[in-house]
Amino acid sequence: MIATSTQGGIEPTRLLYYEDSYLKEFRAKVLAVQQLDKEWRIVLDQTAFYPMGGGQPSDKGRIKGLNGDAIVKDVRIEHQLVVHFADEITGKLGQGEEVLGILDWNLRYSLMRNHTLAHLMAEAIRRATGLTEEVVSSGLDVDKARLDTAREGSLGPMIPDIQEIANNVIKENRPVEVKMMPRKEAEERVARFHESLKTLPSHVEKVRVIEIKEWHACACGGTHVKSTGEIGGAEVLKRMSKGKGVERIEFRAKTS
Image (cartoon, rainbow, N blue to C red; front, side, top):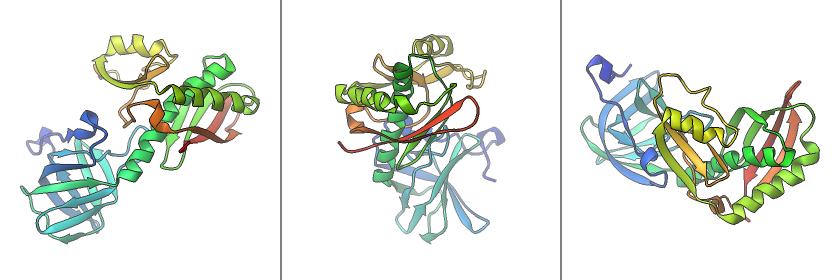
């Protein structure tokens, strides 16, 4: 286990993807390199690699040093440290060395588009049904996303309307804004869009809110595009019942 700041070791990782989700490359300093259970664990002082969480998969890519190269296969947060996992390191990466991080941009951008679309679709479902549908679960991947909503009855007959509403908002090219705000202000803001902070730990006092301008807002730590137009288009792939009172729809961002 890599030492944490609370143990007098490494300081928390600076999260560059919070500051700019469009970073494709970045410079950083290696704070620790360890080999455990046949895989390498690399910690940098700062990173643009998104660690798995909030329903969003981690980024992939490369970490290149002067004499070493690692293919990043997974990224996770452990005790406020972002840990980059690699099966092997070609050459050597040394502690204190400056390295270049390179994201798999096609993967990242696909995730960004689908993630923003998932936020947009939550409200599209509500508009189509005329009900304040509660999103009880969600998931995200490079080629699709899903929402599970609490409702009685099938969403099937409303799928054409949901898709049309979503595509209209995409065509409007609404700005997607990232805001940090006090918890009380965030609670009031997301409530306007039928969302809540009930799943957010009570000790969190500053909340990161993603808002599709005057359409939808919720607390989110993921990466997003800057405007709905970047999504391209919305395509509903299928719907299914997940048991009594829960409906799932799967959809994807597509190039229009």
